[in-house]
Every structure is written in C-alpha cells, then in structure tokens.
Length: 316
Length: 272
Image 1 (tube, each protein chain N blue to C red):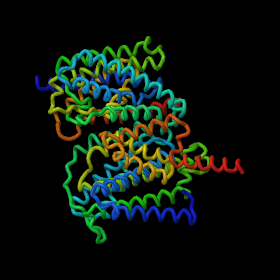
Image 2 (cartoon, chains in turn purple, red; image 1 turned 30 degrees about the vertical axis):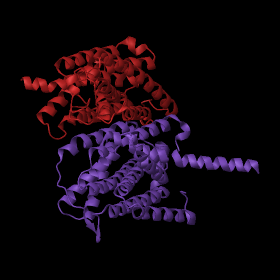
Image 3 (cartoon, one colour; image 1 turned 180 degrees about the vertical axis):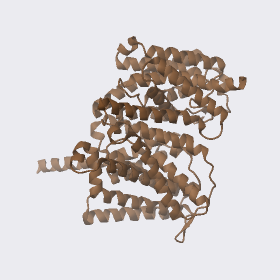
Image 4 (cartoon, chains in turn yellow, purple; image 1 turned 90 degrees about the vertical axis):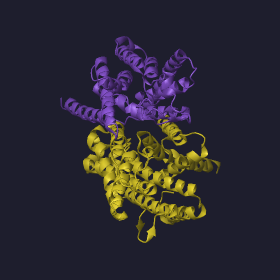
C-alpha cells in the first residue's frame, strides 16, 4: 500500500475518489459532520506521524497547535480578511506552538516531551482559550466556492488532508524524512552521518504543528469561531496519540486507518458519553503493553502478509 | 475577609489532594522526575465518590471506605501496568535522552479511560474546580489535614521500603481518603445541583500533581508546601479573576519553571 508505482497510484486515486464521493452519497447533516471530524483526525494523525513515528518520541502538543490554528483563523476571518491569509496565519500559529515544547526540552531531554507538550496543551486550553473573546464570522467563499454548506467544507477539508498526506509521503521518501527518522533511531549515529540534530528536530516539530494547525482551520470554519474545549483539552491529546498508534506510528496510511476507527467509534458505542476517549485509552495501553502491537494495523497487516507468504512457501 | 476565606476553602482542600498526589508522583518513578500519570487517579476517585454520594440517603462512611478501597485497588493495578510498560519499553531510567515517558502516558491513558467508562450521563463539567465539587469549611479542613498526614506518611522510610505495588496501593488509599472530603461529597447539598454532578478534570489533576512533584525536590515538606501553594494560588486567582483562565496560570508557570530548572540541573550534572 505504501509502495510507489502504478499500483500505489491507483490505490491512492481510488481512495481519493471514494472520499470525494462520500458527501454526495451520504447527504445527511450528521454524516457530513462525521466526515469532517474524521478528516480533522487524519490531519492530527499525520501531525503525530512526524513526531511519534519518525522522531520516536511522545509529543502531545497537537490539541494546542490545533487550537492555535483555530484561534488564528477566527481572528483573521473575524476581521473580514480572506481564507488564504487565515490559512497561512493558522499554519504558522500551529507550528509556533509546536516549537515551544521542542525548545523547552531539546533533543537531549526528549524523554521530558510528554510532560512539556502536555503543559503547553494545558496552557492553551486552560489559560489562552478561556481568556480570548473573538468575533464570530460567516463561513467564507474561497475561489468562488461557498464554504457555507457542510458538503463544500468537507471537500475543503479533504483537500487539506490530501495535501497534508502528499507532503508527509513525499517527505518520508526524501532526504528530510530520512534525516528525521535517523534522528529518532539513533541521534548520535545520525549526527555522525552529517545530520544537523537541532535543525532536524525543530523542522519536525514545525511540520507537525503546521499539520495540526491546518486541522484547526477546518474546525474554526466549521463552528464559525473557536471550537469547543473538548478538542483542545489534554485528554484529547491521548485520542490523537491513539490515532497515530492504532494505524502504526510513522505511516500516513496508519494515520488514516486510526482516524477512521477513532472517528467512527462514537457511532459504534453510542450509549457511552466518552466512547472515543475510552477506545483511545485502550489503544494506548495495549500498544504500550504488547510488543507485537507496536506496528499498529499497518504493521500488523504487513506481519500477517509475511506470515501468510511464509506459510504458503512452506506448503509448496 | 470572610468572603476571601470562603473563596480560599476549595484551594485548601485542593492543596491536601495535591500534597498527597505530588508526594506520590515523586515517589512513584523512583527517579529524578515525578510520575506524569498517577495524579489523574484523584479525578477518577472524585467521580466515584460523586456517584456513590449522589443519592441523598447514601451513608457517607460507606462512601469514604469504598473510595479508599477503590483507590488502593486501582493504584495497585496501575502499578502493575506501569511495571509492565517499563519492562516492554525500557523506559523510566530517567537518563537524559532516554526513551519517552511511555509508562507515565500509559498510566494517564488508563485513568482517563477508566473515567470515560464510569462517567454517568449526569456528570458534566461545572465551574467547581478540578475535583468537580466544592467542599464546606469542615470538609476542606479535614481534606487539608488528611493531605498533610498522607504526604508525610508517603515520605517516610517505612513506606519507601515496601514493594512498589503495595506502596502504590497505600498511596491510592490515602488519595481516596483525601479526595472524598475535598470534592465536597461529604455534604449532600454540594451534590444537589439540578440532578447533575461535576466532572473532574482528570488530565488537569495529573498535570497539577506533576507540577507539585517537580517542585518537591527534597522531602514530604516540599510536597506539602508546593501542593498548598498551588491550591491556594489557584483558588485565589479564580476568586479574583473569575472570567478567563487565570486559575490555571500557577500550574502552567510551575510546570514551565520546574521543567527549565530540571533541564538546567541535568546539564550541570552532566558537566560535573
């Protein structure tokens, strides 16, 4: 799935076609909202792919970057400015917030990142968000497309998620991605091979924050203001972590799989008020406790494919 | 003056909870860093206490006993989880540049999951502080005294010598004993709020306890001072600036300063 070539391209185009057709096939208000929520989770999962998957550390800043992106979007659109300007501001705000825990700990003290990043999330959720009063705005029109309907907003979110996916996949195969993964694997060895640890470290967090900031743009336009506290809270950081871990940290496909499962969880267990949080907690605990679960769904399916191939070869 | 004292009561009670949770977070990892996850148990226990105490006729001593036993049991389970994850991940060494706090995050996730599981539909966020309820004066003083006693007990050599699972169970039971009065669940009137109960801020309590653990660098007295300092500062700010997020500023500042000092001390230790 993650490989290149005609097969990989066909698979991606089919997936994109299915995702684009979804709001036309499922025309109900709830279904389109759920689709937007899942695309937000995809962007957040991609954000975690960079830090948790490539840098192999646990950074829980995604809700803070998302909130910063949403705040920036609300501030810019509330002043009557254009969506592209709001988007640029939001991406920058998301990246800036992600750089705070990265600067607090640096690579040398990366074991402190869960604490530092949760502290930043707490600061944004508990101090910044309740203190700001922003003007509500009407959903904007961008290049002639009115984002007033949930269907068009879904397609806008799909565009952002698709671009995010392409960026992460492209970077994964590029020198930048290789340097980030090398730094996550063995910082001393990576430094010995010419990788600049500080630049790579901060670049990874900036990229991660940018992706989460893009999710904030979608949520801000959806609610025409700052999203509710639930998506900014430290507890939601565990949901985002679970999105990355379920699919297999480090894999964009894994982020999609995790977002689908976590996004649809409230439908499957509808009677519980916190079904998503419960499922996320279970995923984090299982992945942390079971060595074989580290690869997530993607790693698990690859393992199953290898195992099947080995068994088939044995039968022959 | 009386108004100010009344406004500080929730801070006194929260201080007792944070003293125990902070001392436990310091004790739990057996290393230089506080444990990120254990303080969250205060939120889970506050929710259990609120559920048990919600019927007006429920006997209060039974609530106290059940919450203390639940605290001990849950803490023992968390100790086993923490040990298992550390064994798998090789985390918890506390060495600079080592693996991230996987066990801490797993413990935090487990408690957040437990709260999601036991949360009734009538539990909603209310502006009653992180424990979800407000204590009266006697309950706040009881929570403060229990908190000081619990933190001192956790700092003794006798507790430090016992096996980790038992040590966590003792800490969980102590936390349960403090949480019941601190969350206002001893007073039926505190819960009669239109048939709903306050939802505790589970992850926020974990971070408050971690902030106390970062500040409590030497002994139990440090945990007591930091716990009450944080609790009182939070309630004073909440009373003085009720709108906005001023109440959480002390926790955020304590975490930021604690992390910076911690990183600086590590650097000095490496240089030495």
